[in-house]
Length: 208
Image 1 (cartoon, one colour):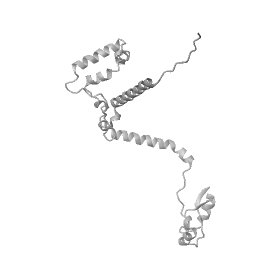
Image 2 (tube, one colour):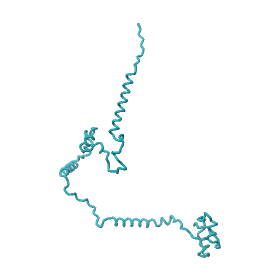
Image 3 (spheres, one colour):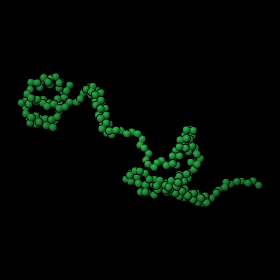
Image 4 (spheres, one colour):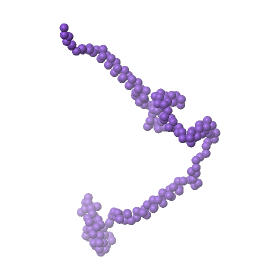
């Protein structure tokens, strides 16, 4: 079954057909394809209706699917060949001049030797008791030369993240101080309430 435009007698001109159809010029009805072909064969070319594009059959799409995928694969290969340099160099680049630092090289050699012995540096750090010290972060920041403002810096653009532009309550130091102030106020209220309370003692009867 194929959808074809509404058919009119050959004597009707295009202007009269448009008047009859009005806003429904694109209206289509279901007409058997064989009958349509036989009927249109006896009509002049100027009076035959114009057929629009028909939907692709899902069976045809499944039939040509492997070839379509092969075409995409070939196109992808061509793009890879065009974007790669003539002589691809996928090796690790050499070290820059005047490197590495002898002290850093000695440290890496030491850590690699420990790893060969079964000692893993990260596991040793995680099991160290000194890392559980709350002030360790502050000491490490001072050792690296990072102050309280620089610890919030990032590589993002300023439009996305601007640490100096944060409000005062956006930093941990201010939040910690606010928590201490609230805790101190609550402790003062508890102490005042204890002083204002009058303890009551239950009455006891003493027999003579």
